[in-house]
Amino acid sequence: MASEAVTPRADRRLHRARQATLLSLATGVWASVLLPAVGLTHEPDPGRLALGAVGILAFVVAQTVVLYAAVTPWLHPRWRRRAEGGLAVVAVLTVPLVGPVAAGRWPTWAWLGAALIGMTPLLLRWRAALALAAGVLLVAVAVAWWTNGSVARHLAVTGGIGAAVAAVNGLQIWFWGLLVEARQGQADQARLAAAEERLRFARDVHDVLGHSLTVIALKAELAARLAPVDPERAGREAAEVQRLAASALTEVRETVHGYRAVDLDDQLSAVVGVLRSCGVRCTVLPPPTDLPPAVASELAAVLREAGTNVLRHSRADWCRIRIDREKDMARMTIANDGADGRGPDAHSHGLRGLADRLAAAGGGLHVHRRDAVFTLEVTVPVSS
Image 1 (cartoon, rainbow, N blue to C red):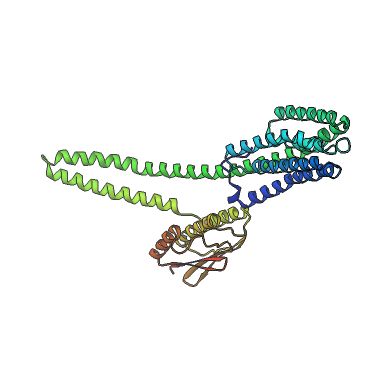
Image 2 (spheres, one colour; image 1 turned 30 degrees about the horizontal axis):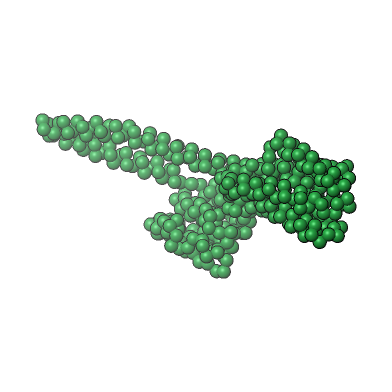
C-alpha cells in the first residue's frame, strides 16, 4: 500500500488522483446498495424487510469506511485495522439479516457476497484474498441451501460478479500505489539532492579551512612558546597568524558566495517545473539577458523563496512570473491566486530576511493581497 509519509492533501495532482480513485471505487458501494435493494422490493414480510435494510445499510457504511482508508495513506494503521475489523463483523451479521430477504426469488445476500469478494484486493494479499473468496462462496452456497434458492445462481453472482469487481478494484489500487510510490520517490530524490549539496558544501568548507586552521594553530602555539624568550620573533609569528586568519576568512566568504550564487534561468526553470508538476499553471516572461550576475543572484534567491511559499502557503491554480529591466532597475513580479489569509505576508520570516538582504543591495521588496491574489514585487538596482 501507499507510503505513510505521503500526504496527497499537499500535492494537487496526487490529491485529484486520490479523489478519482475513491470515486471509482465508490461505484461498487452504490452497486452494493442497488442490487440487494432489488431483493427488498420482493420481500413481503415487513420484519425481514426492516432487518434486511438495516443489514444492507450497515454493510455499505462499513464498506465505505474501508474504501476511504484504502486510499488515505496518512491514516494511522490502527484506524485502518479497525475499519477492516468493522467490515468483517458487519459481513458476518448480514448473513442472518439479509440472507432470508426475498428467499427463492432474488439472491439478495449473493450480491453482498460479490461486493465482499470485490473488496479482497484492498484488504489482503492475493493468497489470503483467495482463501477469503473461497469462504465467501461457501457462505453463499449455505445461504442458497438455507433459503431454498438456486445454488448455481448464488455462485454465479457471488463468484462471477465478485471476481470482476475484485479485478477492477485491484487494478485501481495497484495504479494508486504506483502513483504514490512515484511521488514519494520524487520527494526522496529531492531530499537526497539537498543532502548531497550540503555534503558538497561541507567538503568545500573543510578543504578551505582544514589546512589554514592547522597552520594557524601551529603558528599560534609557536608564538606562545617564543613570547618569553624571543618577543620579536613571537610578534612576527603572531602577525603571520593574523594574516593567515584573514586569508582563511576571505576564502570562506568566496566559498559561501559561490555556494549561494544561483543561475537565474536555472532557478526559474526549476521553480516553474515544480509548480507545474503540482498542478499550478505558470505564465512566465523570461528575464532579460543583460542582467549582471550579482543582480540575477539576488532575484534567484527571491524566486526560490516565492516558489516555496506558493507551494507551502497557498492553494494556487495559477502563478505569473515577470522579470524585466527598466533602465537602472531590475524588477521581478510574482503573483498567484492562492491567497487564503494564512499565507506569507510582509512580516513572514523568509520574506523579511529577503527584504533585509535586498535593502543591503539598495533594492526593495513589496507584497500586497487583493481578494485571493497575492503579489510579490522585487526591485534591485543595476549598476551602470
